[in-house]
Length: 133
Image (cartoon, rainbow, N blue to C red; front, side, top):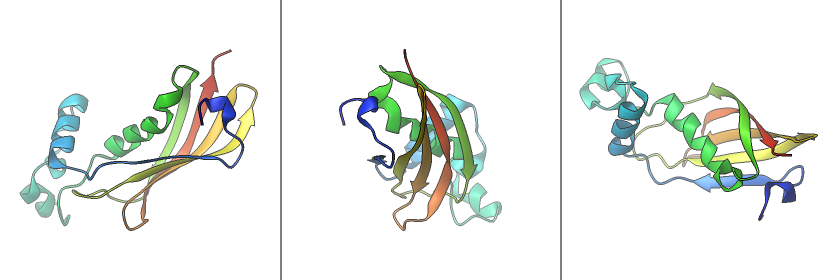
């Protein structure tokens, strides 16, 4: 699809990310200011009862915006509504999906999800994308 206006109801945008690395999470911690050690230090994650370090939920949510990167010349994300559905661990491979479910004037409504390599949902929600007039 060359433009966002080419999308029809039911069309899907999809991106598969590289496996999650510790460096990804360290960089995100620095950028976001979220230095909770469960995201970067194995022993701290285990002390918190986790099987290993987990990605920041907002790291996963932020990556969803990559689905819309090709279209930022045509509009912008006006609203994210997200629910965290599962944890993301090191080496997980996330596939990000946005299904166009509604169109109202200049707004496109997408159901968005992130699923891991086992097809387990980690994030779900909606995105409102507004096209420029």
